[in-house]
Image (cartoon, rainbow, N blue to C red; front, side):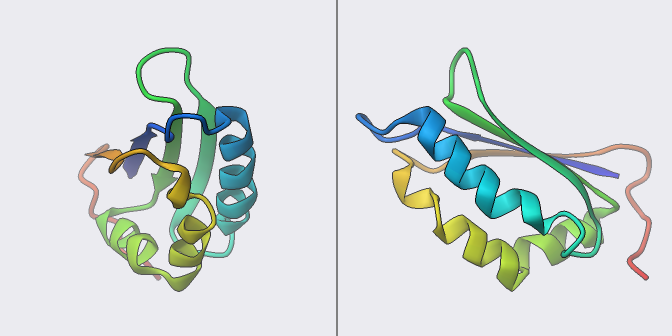
Length: 102
């Protein structure tokens, strides 16, 4: 299993709660539509960065498939213009991370 964590900082003057709602509407429907994406959460943080995205994926292969998937690309386009700089991305393998997509 891969845990995919992305931390975002929004641009000065952007409404963080509003960006979270846009991101939730764009990303949450991907669970069940992109093979290997098991779960996703996006929340406003209370310290440091403004927004945290947390996803669980079946494997490294599923992570690569998700990263390049057209639905994922389209979802990101709906909210990434509100970010002040590049997000911080952390991908962690739990177990051996070797489960293959069917």
